[in-house]
Image (cartoon, rainbow, N blue to C red; front, side, top):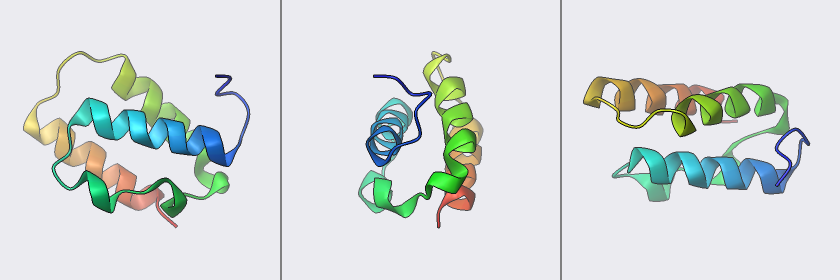
Length: 73
C-alpha cells in the first residue's frame, strides 16, 4: 500500500492500524469516515509514530487519542 497517496482507502487503513496498535477500548467510536483528507499529512505522521513504537504508556495512549479527536472532521 502506498501511503504517500492521499485517498480514503489509505485513511481507513491508517486509522484501523492506529486503533489496533493502541488497543483502544472505545475503538468502535473511531471511524475512518470521521477524518478528512485535508488532515491526511497529520494522520500519516501519527501513523508513522504509532507504528514505529513498541509500547505505549497510558498517558501516551491518552495523548494520541486526544490527537485523533483533534484530527476528526
